[in-house]
Length: 95
Image (cartoon, rainbow, N blue to C red; front, top):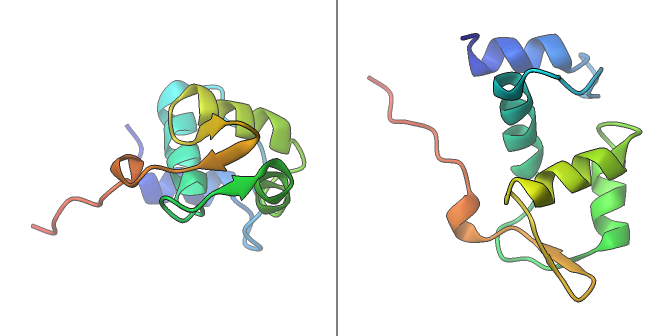
């Protein structure tokens, strides 16, 4: 499997825009974890705020938002979105 850094380098432009959404699940997970990290844990966002944040990275913010919800990286209820602290990805300690 490719390293996280390599996947990010391959799928993001130097300007930080997502070039395409990966089809392969392992690569898509790396991208979705990266984008989910852009959300502050336990902060509630409106749908417009989520869309605006994701639009900074890719024009198809709807697909990305849906993927973040479907995979549990973001939660949604009553028109509000949030990332629970328990979904924060922690990097493993350096060897």
